Length: 210
Ligand SMILES: Nc1ncnc2c1ncn2[C@@H]1O[C@H](COP(=O)(O)OP(=O)(O)O)[C@@H](O)[C@H]1O
Ligand SMILES: Nc1ccn([C@@H]2O[C@H](COP(=O)(O)OP(=O)(O)O)[C@@H](O)[C@H]2O)c(=O)n1
Image (cartoon, rainbow, N blue to C red; front, side):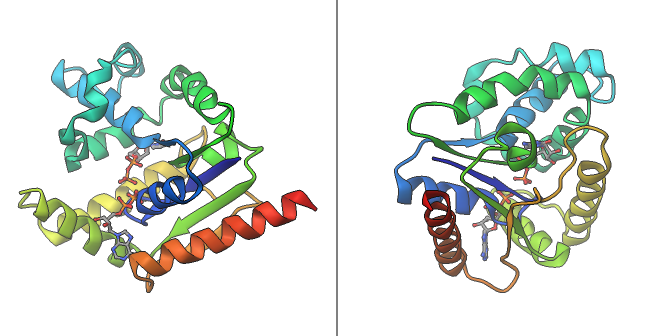
């Protein structure tokens, strides 16, 4: 069973995807980490994230990077959004994600284009959203907890800029698949949003079996 979880920054999609993976005993891939690893490599080598050739050269990143906590830095998130808009970067990372989705038994993947591009055949598709203000509050608290002194206003501005860039790019823009169920976590606790997500997946599985 493939479960696709998409949504904008700090909507709670990663939290939900991890919980679904635990609940259904499936492997999980946070696809944002792949774009973040490309971004970190571009920055480490003092390359230009806006230059497609520089970003593509960084797709062959060191695998150990994927476990590096610094990928969560806000500058890397912002740079990931720039490199991910290049069609050749998306193409370079496509097969790896498709293979992960297609493994026997299934998988949970979260990102921006899982339900639309990576796994259009997923049994369950969730599109997780929350208001920009609430997402900025969550991300701000998260970054503060990691020792960042980023101001709330900057985090909010970055979230809005990332939403705009991710949803207007030509390839695989951030958008809900037509058959995705939208889950608004703005006023839900983590526990409540996980419960709703399990309910949505159980219903999708039951429909699939009909
Ligand atoms: N429903 C929720 N209520 C409050 N905080 C949440 C909720 N869902 C997630 N969070 C917190 O918000 C932050 C971003 O969540 P995360 O799942 O990483 O988002 P995303 O993967 O969409 O960027 C994390 O610190 C997480 O613990
Ligand atoms: N499937 C994906 C996942 C991430 N991304 C890009 O990578 C950036 C970082 O993604 P992420 O999921 O790690 O970011 P957060 O939502 O956790 O802040 C996003 O802003 C997108 O531009 C993408 O284009 N496609």
